[in-house]
Length: 338
Image (cartoon, rainbow, N blue to C red; front, side):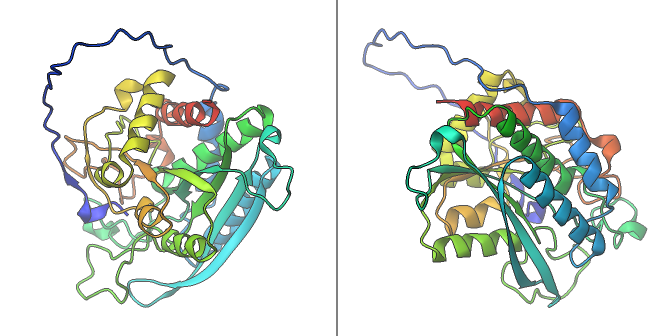
C-alpha cells in the first residue's frame, strides 16, 4: 500500500483574481446530518480485532477474524458475500485471501424490481496485517508480525460502526457496499533483496475485487472512499495525491463533508503525497472514482505514515478515539447528505 512510493508533494497555493464582478448569491449553509458516530463503539471494534492477534495471511487469527467481521456485518442487517481467491505474493507464496463484501440498502431505496441494484457508495478498508515489522527501529523486530491496531483494524472498526448506525437509523441517502479487502499488506518487505514474483505485490485483494467488478459489467457503484490507518494519535488527513489525480471532485466533496461535520482542522485542504493503496485498482481497474483517507505526518522522523507504521508499536495504546470520531462522522456526513 503506502510504503516507499509515498513521497511529499508540496501544494503551491496561489490567489486568483476574477475580472468579472461577483454575483450576489445566497447559499444555504451546509449543516451536519446523520446520527452521532460512537467512538467508544469503534474503539471496541478495533480492540476486538486485535484480540485475535496479528491477522497475517494464511493464519488462524486471520481466518477467525474474517469470520467474526462477516458475522458482525450480518448482525447489522447487511447481505454478506465472501469473495475467495488464491493470490500469489511477492515471494511466490499462495495467499488464501477472502474479500468480505457487505451490502446495506435503506428500505426507502429498495427497488421495486428485485433484480435491480440501486446506486451505491463503496466504503472499504483492508483487514489483513503486516507479517513483518520491517520499519521498526530495532532490526531484531523486522520479521516480527505487526498487531495492526491502526494499519488494519481501524478502518474496519469505522466501517462496522457505520453499519451498526445504518441499521438503527435507516434514513441514509445512499446504499452502501462495504468491502474489507484482504492481502493488502503482504507487499515486498524492506529487507528483501530479490525481485518480486508478481508485478504489483501490494493491494492484492483490491486488485482481485476490481477485476471481478469489471468482469461482471457492474456499474452500480457511484464512488468509493478508502479508509486506511484512520485511528492513529495525532493524525491529520491531507488530500492524497492519487485521489486528487483520479477523483478530485470526490476528494473535495469528502473534505468539505469533514469540515461540515466539525473536523476541518484534521482534514487540511493541502496535498500530502502519492500513495500506492487499495484505491488505485478501484479507480484504474473498476473505474470507480475512489478517494483515500490516509494520514500524513509531515514532521515524523520514523515515517510519513506516523511513528507506529510497520512497527511492533502499532497497538491499541496508540489508537485515538478522537481520530476515529473525526473520520467516522465524516463518513456519516457523506452517507446521510441528500
